[in-house]
Length: 477
Ligand code: NAD
Image (cartoon, rainbow, N blue to C red; front, side, top):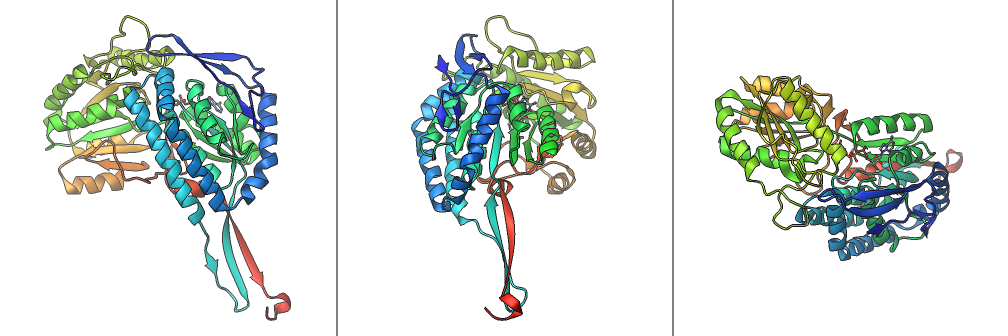
């Protein structure tokens, strides 16, 4: 069992007077991690301590900060297996996927280590005896509040970008993956000056206490409801809110595509990581011409997945993160069925321990159903049949979210219409996942605000100072 410790003011094992949380393995219910809960007072002290070292880290040469981040990437790489095992034990994803998330995180740390010292600003030339320049500066104290679904990749992005740009960081990992966060913080703290990174653990109340503090940035990856609460807290303190939140990503399946190939894409989009991916396919608008063959192939795919604990190498579909989340997923599926939808695969709670949920295909869905409009975050493909590509685009665009969308089409003009008309941060044509390294996107509406990834994240954690220099007395230098 992992025994998690907090890191406050450079001291491991500090605080935890708010009690203890125990995380259970979603595959079998056995206890995995014991976690201290921070009090509001401990959170305030951690912020004060971080503020105390912020100026020193900000003044550290950019190349030295970058070198520290390279060492951080090495330290995380040395713990790849340990981190992947913790992810699987705490949130259930297949071990190979968990390792992929750790490797993605290491890659991100290395990218930011390379990009950090290359940053500069513009120089402006006004009068002959004057010069203006724009210098990037760290924002100061960053609160990084992260989710459980890909905990290492997401955390490495926020922590790496914030640290390399000269900010100190208070890290609050999800209460569902705290040991993963603790292992990551240990790796990073070992190569950073004392106090540059702090670790606070506990549930949403600890995140709320942190977001309410006088910090400079609150960076949150997580649900839309939490993001909105954080935005409200930031409005009160003046902190910048960087929000990467939930989505209900559509997949449009156009007439003329190979329905079996399209079903393969839909299966990956809906069932990978048991549907617990921010950009998972949440709702499918399929053209009537291909709908029957598409659904048949999707049902076959759903039934062919090997279900089991994430630590078993043959597992393709692990459990959901916990039973509370399974109740949420199953509640949306049963409500849709009660409103007239048809279960074509899955949708039945299995017997036995853990939080397993089968790959589920629901047809005869209507656009206005909660299963279609809201984020399910489970292995559920909700299928709506449409009569035209225009109808599919209209439905896909009609959402309180704006994270990403995928379109499968053989038509170049439909592909062009899709990326122009869909009001989302990322449009993917003929692949549900993928994208070039370094890609970044700006979520819209309920999905958040600001770049959460890519080189642009370095800008989010920086501010720019503009300096105007002029010769004294209007004369010469
Ligand atoms: P969550 O918002 O419940 O929790 C995320 C973090 O916020 C946790 O550390 C939690 O303790 C903290 N928190 C909870 N309530 C808080 C409050 N009132 N104030 C401050 N902090 C609080 O989200 P989750 O369930 O962990 O993650 C799943 C969600 O994350 C999904 O909606 C998913 O789409 C989203 N997500 C989005 C992205 C993206 O890039 N857009 C990436 C991954 C996950």
